[in-house]
Length: 238
Image (cartoon, rainbow, N blue to C red; front, side, top):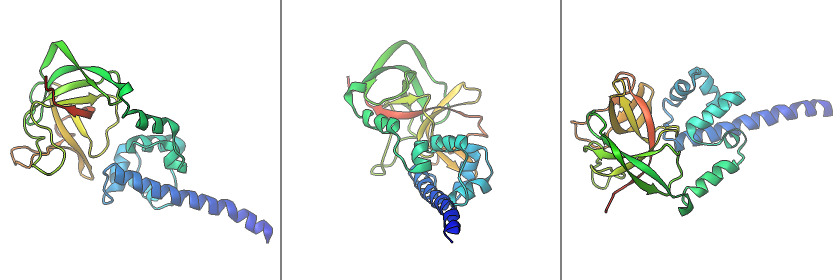
């Protein structure tokens, strides 16, 4: 009898590990703005696996291999150690802490305008101006000026980006559902600024302005490429 009990312990441990992982996975998906309906399809597309495999992760039936676990964590913007074992990742915690410290002030170039409406050519300035930020971001980050009104949300509805505002774009940050992004489309000759929405039907660039003049853009159909994630926004007062 003791030998039988001894054999069962690892199985119970593995089951608990899978259950805890599925809870953290669901939490990370919710935090990333990936709704429960269609969640498996969305993750499967992002990771290059089958929806059935993701379904098993979500239902505590299995866990990803180490390499895929890291990819999954990157997509959800969490640490692999937390996602797999529930352990805090010191590196991630430090980054989160340091992001709000004034000591991380950096200067980045203003490259020009980006359309917040229909596609229009990005106007590039060669006599570059530099503006500062306290947000920790990649050294190749840059500021763009919002041009247009498609990202002007109705008053009282939350985040809004008015024409003339400056947005800081991190070209190396992995985008997640609900992020604000800059995308280059039509052979990269055009640029636009939108909110990204990852749905079972595909990935879309979505305006904040409900005016029917501004349309959702299907990334695949318009041959768009995400150029970076917006990590800061500000007005230049002087």
